Structures are given as structure tokens and as C-alpha cells.
Length: 129
Image 1 (cartoon, helix red, strand yellow):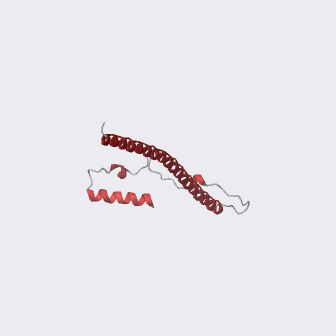
Image 2 (cartoon, helix red, strand yellow; image 1 turned 135 degrees about the vertical axis):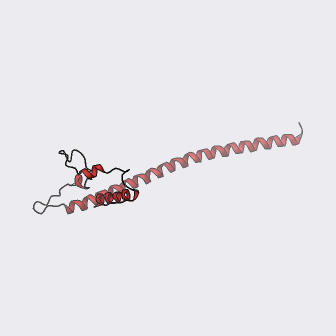
């Protein structure tokens, strides 16, 4: 085997060995980076949860201060009554059937598009007030 071929072969083996070592080092560093990143994301989630809990606690404290009764000084818990419920017409609300007949008689094919839009706006305004 000529000397130049041996040198090239030796160089090729050395380069491949070096690249294999670098590849292993990079794999190891990637594993470490993934662990560090996972921990960082976990800490970030925990901080966010704690921040949300503190915000909720502050809101509850303010509500409790507002709900203190004058005589005994204890806070009443009205957490269940925070939001008012939206009630829609149903048969359970009107068991005797006293609904207005004209509300039931309106159908979409009997009225124009402009009238439909007007009725929709009235419905929306009545829901928000």
C-alpha cells in the first residue's frame, strides 16, 4: 500500500473518530439542555399558578371585606351568587301557558330581513339590560 494512501486512511479514521466524539458530546449536552429546559418550564408553570392563586385570594379577601355584617363581624360567603343567571322563556317558567300569542306566531318567512334584524337587535338589547 502506498504511503499516501496510508496517510489518507489514517486521516479519514482520525476525522471519523473526532466526529463520533463530537456527536456523543452534543448528544450529552442536548440531554442536559432538555432537563434544564424542562425544569425551567416547570418552575414557570408553578410561578404562574401561584400568581393566579394570589389573585384569586386577593379577590376573595376584598369580597369578604365587603360582605362583613355589622353585628357579629363575620364574613358571609356569597360565592355561589357571584353572577346572575340568565333565564330564558321555558315551559317551566310559565306552566299555565300565558305566553303572548304574537311572539309565538312570528316566523322568519313572514317578515322581511330588515324586520328580522330589528327583532334580533331588540332581543340582544333585552338580554344585556
